[in-house]
Length: 354
Length: 154
Image (cartoon, rainbow over all chains, first blue to last red; front, side):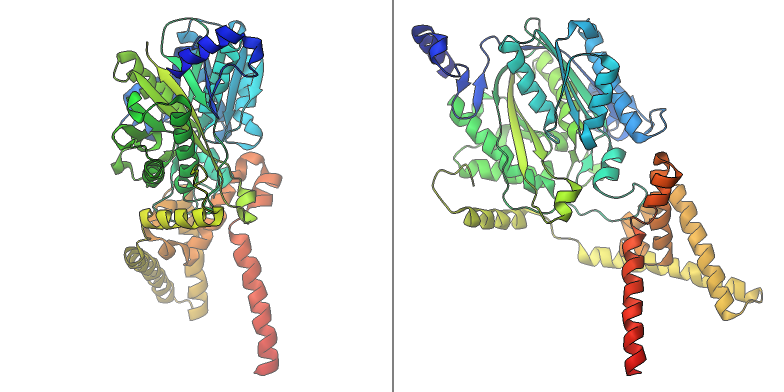
C-alpha cells in the first residue's frame, strides 16, 4: 500500500522534512486518522420523494414554498432544517461544532449564508456549483485530520424553482427543454464529520482541476462536466495506484444519462474500465417515467443522494468502499451570454465502511 | 483529453471531444415536435376562430370581432398560466404554444407571477418584459425599417 509506505517514510525522515506529508501523488490527499461521518440528514421535494430513492430521505416536502412566502426562503428553510436534523441525529448542538461548511447555487450563496446566520456556528461559505457537497467533505476532512477542528457540519442545497429563475426562465413560462437538459433537484443534505465516532470514514480526497473542453451549451451540462469528472477519476486511480475494482461503487454527482456515457468513455480511453461499478446520482434520483430528460442536477442532487441513499447503503453494508465525485458546471448566466464556454470541475472523496 | 499524457494539441482534443458528444447526444425530434406544434398551434387557432365566429354572430364587425377574440385568448392564456397549465401546453406543443398570441400572454404573465416577491417596482415593474421585451424591441425596430423602405420604394 502506498499509504503505509508514505507513513514509513514520514517516520524515517520526520514529518517536518516533507512539505506536504499527507499529499499522495499529484492531486490526492489521504487522511492519517480518517474522519468519521457520524450523522447524515436529507430533506427533499415531492418529485425527489416520489423517485426511486424516495424512502432513503428523512423528510419529503410537498409544498414548493414549504410554508414560506418565496422559493428562496423555502430553500433556506430546507437547508437549515437539514442541518439541524443532522445535529440532532449526532446528538450535538450548534456550539459543539467547530466549523460549518456550506454552499448552494444562488447568487452570493445566500441560502448557506442565511442558514449560517440562524445557526451561529463559525462558517466558511463554499461555491463549487453542484460539486459543493464534495468540496465540503474534502475540506472538512482536511480540517479535522489537520487538527484544526474536531467536528465539522457540512451541507448544501438547491431548489428547482430558485435555480430555474436564476439560470433560465420564469417557471411558468412555456418552453421546450432539449433531451440533454437536466432537472434541478429540490433538496438539501447535511453531514456531521467528526474526529471520532462510528460510521463511514473518509480516507482520501482528490481535488479536481477546472477543465473546459469547449462545450458551450448550458442545456447540456453533462457533456461540459464529463471531462472534469473523468480527469479526477483517472488522477485519483493513478495517485493511489488503485484499480477501479478496489471500489464497490464509483459514483458521479450529476452528469446525467449522456454525461455519464461520456465520462465512462473518457476514463476507458485512459485504460481504466469502470463500467461495471459506475453510477451517477443524477440518474438514480429520478425514474425514467418522471420525464426529467437526462436526469437530476444541482447542489442538492449529490448532497441528498450521498446523505440519504449512499449513507444508508454504507451503513447497511451494501457498499463497503465507494468513490464519490461531486461534479460542477462553473457557469453563470452572464458568462454564457457573453459567449464563454462551460468549464467543469470534479472533486473525489473516498468513503469506506470499516 | 487534458489528462492524456501523450501530447495531442488542445484544439485537436476539443474537436475529438466534440465528435464524441455529437455521437452520444440525441438529435432533437424534429418531426415529432413539428407534428405536435402543428396540432397544438392549430387547436389554439381553431378556438380563436370559434370565438371570432361567436362575436360575429353577436353582431360585431370583422375588426371588432378579431380584437375581442384576441382579448379573450389573452385572458384565457393568462388564466391558464396562473393555474400552472400553460407551461405544460408549450412543453408539449413547443412552437405551437409559443407563437400564437396566447404564447405572448404567457410570456408576460409568467414573469409577473415570478417576480412579484421582489415587489411591484423592482420586481414586476422592472422585469415584466424580460421575455417579451426583446420581441417587442426588435419587432418595432423591424416595423420601423420596413416602414422607411416602404416610404421610398412603394
